[in-house]
Image (cartoon, rainbow, N blue to C red; front, side, top):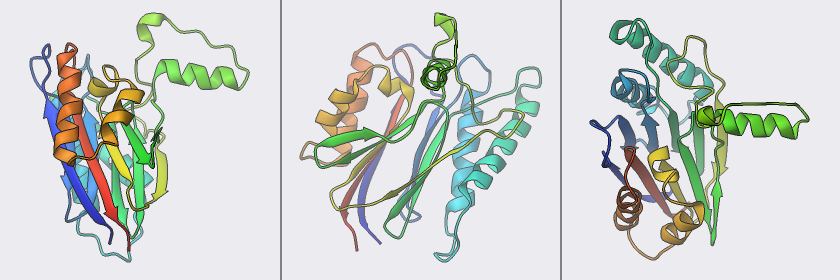
Length: 241
């Protein structure tokens, strides 16, 4: 198993009345990730909490020889959140983003739905490993394929898929072989809408502890107004075997 250090931190911010972000940091089971309750719907905290609880239940303590089907796992989580939404908010439902990974051997296996993100730092290059499932981003990709797509500017950040929707969502799967010195940041949009990628790169590559660097990132997002909950999980890969 690789040698890993990690930290997690969440902040309610300066505007929201409650924190509807949740995170997963389970070093013994090598599970990491974030979930962000969908704004505009009731029960966002319930949706995010259910999502991370179901991730841990599905992934933790599984035998090393078992190959996990992350798409099936996410679809089951989606069903659990959808069913919870029928109880919590029968007229509107509930929803959450979910971006998580688990390490098996020397590979980080990730599943992603929504607009939370995972970044990977290798050397001095920070790469966004996920794609936001937003109206704006989907329109950009469809236009790149030659399609004519319009959307209202007010809806640019609206999600095109989430956990808790009535039908199983499309799930992005990313497998990332680990290298010594890699660093990975899972975070919600309360971070990425306030802190530029170039700033994240400059902070994440510093010579410090995961706790100190993550605290700096979250504090920066809150200091810039904190309009949303801000949450992150930062992982250092110190060595691989």
